[in-house]
Image 1 (cartoon, rainbow, N blue to C red):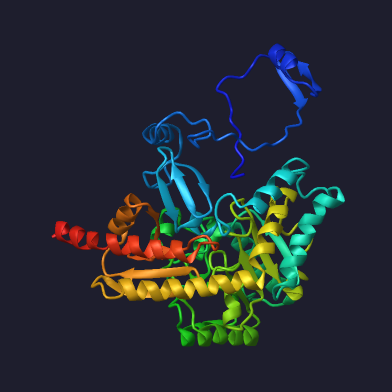
Image 2: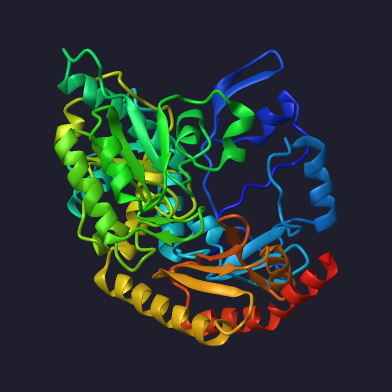
Length: 470
């Protein structure tokens, strides 16, 4: 089994046709409007020989159709993906690609993982959503509780709040930090309500998380964003300590390894200084591990490699292996400040996504799995340095585990395009001059070696694009 698909016809049958067509349908008809509940059993689709899931058009037609009806917020690569298996993706014309992007570090178990699919199908046939207004029957609500318990058991945290994405998780962390200060200092005239973020940071695109994101071109079209955020140089211990000691800072937001910003790793000294300064001043330390967390570094949590722990940690991308989920992990002290009605979400923490997340966490948290990520990451990094390090345009290969950046002295987009045309999907980061490699964590050494060979073969395109620009 590779994935679940629901194929819809273009026309809606009349009410009389519906009455004849559905068996086991409970409900009524009001004029031409059907009011009903239908029990649908999810089945694996028949891919046939083409593997295109009933798709009969061309990639060009799909791109043109999207251009007519979708808001143009995405500069998509000109590829229409049809299906995937393992670390391979296939487009509408049947071309194969090695996936070194993993849905931007989301598909940690690759595509079509059987345990992931089993969890989706089993829960989809039982209960998907009832909102957080109600409890659900034990086997459904237990998956939500089990996921929270598992996250608590394998982390610094005592409690969990679920959301639907990384940016939502960071929005919750902003609110929790402000409420924490108000709760523990109710009589203080000048509450600590401000935040510190850092250069090259990325915390999301909603208005609060956006205010914590350093790239000005993300923020400027939507200003004024949330006030009270100061950006400091990533790694500047003195500046951070001085500002934290001012008593104005509710929380410091930092990524132990910056993903979107260009794969920059914090030093242990920097994170330790933030921890100490926050402890002294009563500020909270928030680790954003939306991209670098959950096994990506070869550690379950990226901060474990430093031995330094936050008050709050935000998670999202790989947690449900492709389904939308976010999580905010907090200490008991932080949680004690949050009361009924302080925050909430319609969709967050539903039984479907939580059951799938348990299946993902089951696999990734195993010591042997994490050890394999660490070993593959080290082999991959060494191979990249060996094969690509001598190229005049390669300034540095950096990262930990399977979050690797290759910094270039020229824009990376020509190399991304050349690799795509050669069957390799990669991402950019930083100022557009960093190749970001975040493959599924299940990738084999042979596939990593193939990725290096394709990168090496395509490197000359950088010289060609440079000569054209002169």
